[in-house]
Length: 482
Image 1: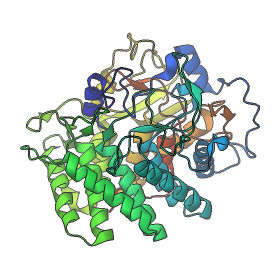
Image 2: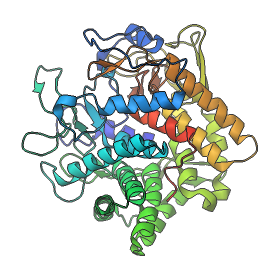
Image 3: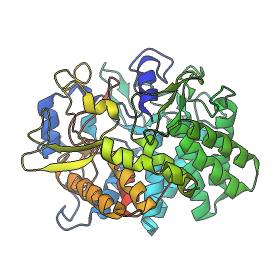
């Protein structure tokens, strides 16, 4: 999700109700202070009372991709008493989002599990796909093909003392929408990723139900998001009150290039090619030829929003458009150069343990000029301008491998090495559903507290989305190629 949209959501969230205005990348940290975050990064934070023995093997002996897969399995299996139909918890318990499972993260998990080319990966990807279909068909308020921003997948007691007793599926069969945090709206980008995942399952398994679900998603986006504003494309989606949101995201339209292209190929219906062309035209209009990068989008459909410049609009555009964007390939060089960071313990506000160094990219141009003397948000720690955003680092590595220009593979390998070192050394002792994770399993969101510039940040908590992107980069699997 682009920084422009994140900013807008802080003031006008997807909720349509009172309560925390959090986007899928807005990680609140549950009031943990800098000391706790430092412990989380160093491997010294342990949850009391888990009583679960880590899985066999160690970070030193098990291959990094195998440990990443073990994390995804643990995120899926955290609540065994609440049914076989489940989604994966997005962040470790220490992040303070309890059992929240973001639709975006679960779509990535499907794609990463398919990229492993293993029988277990296919079984787990299919299970997550069936859970997304159940959510689509058993929403408590809508029957129009939409998915919500996030769901609860296990019980917890919220901060105000109110209990949340259910798993992903409530006793009446409806899905457990994430109302406690206000994750009740529907974003076009989240929907697109879910449709991409379902389309990938349809292609791999031949099961008609997955293609039917992906088509329903595409039709919802067409009905809800299509706009005839001057810049065109597809708008953001709706909030929890079902009110259409006014902004248009480069990242979202990039996602649609893949989704609509995939639907065109799977269904043979030419209408999807026209829709793909509309989304792609918007993306091309946002290109900045002088700087060699893509802007984040527009607030009003007329004026391009020129600051800040996010990382994902540089990498995902290449992954989605590929050979058709030879003239735009400079966007990867822009991201690799202009958003490059190196984090170590001597940096102001870094939580990286002494003797460790991580390289990669940060979230956006705003992250590089964050005020290191002020908290990221109320109750949060101060940011480290050089905090590495590992999700973005993974998709940059994948995009460089996909482009294959001189030096790209070497640069990608350095980034992957940083990701693998982070998986081994950062976020030790964290839990999901109160259960200790396998040793060295799962990539943290950021090496140190990272300010995106829009009132929220990323922190060193192991994350389903970052781990899934690492797996796809390691496997050279491009999820956005239709």
